Amino acid sequence: MSNVTLKGSKEGFVVIINDESDFQQALKDLKELILKQNIGSADDDVIQFTIKTGNRLLTDAQIKEVKKTFTEYPQIEIKDIISEVDSRLEVSKLLKANKMNIETGIVRSGQRLEFEGDVLFLGVLHEGAQISTNGSIYILGKVNGIVQAGFPDNTSAAIFGNLRHAAQLRIADVIEIVTDDNADELHNHQFAYIDDMHSISVNDLQDYKEVMSNSRKGTV
Image (cartoon, rainbow, N blue to C red; front, top):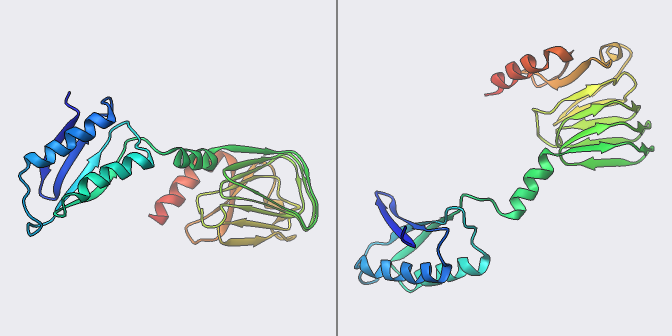
């Protein structure tokens, strides 16, 4: 396979850099490929190029080199540089958003614990304390404070477990105050979620998949 392949389309050109090739050689081949297109003066229409690097993630320095190559030709413009792999930063964000956090400590009044991803809470949440995450929360401990899932706008999050003694439930931007009228609904085999009326509802845990599936359809 050649180091660089050029494909044309109505939207411009796509340059595919072989992800197994030597980068410097591929860059040299790229320059030669551009010259072969017989692109003339700066008066010509601007032609857009999209660079695809496959499973190779270019470093910042390599991206600068590619862009420098194209600046030699004012009638050429890089539309985008696309890789099929994510950067370490993006992967790190993804892992954080999908991990399960386990908390076993005591959260005292005035304290607020914040997480990214789902939380399994095995500790004690005092009145006036708060636990908050952008994912779902599974309660197996004792809670008397505020439980916040889906912060700030994840309406697909849910709260599971015994919440009868909690002060408040919060999912995304919706708040439910726990009172004597609704406390009996919030026992171990229930879960709280945002329904299609954008209110917090409670349902049996055994119906979780069906309820959440229907709820998400209603928001599409």
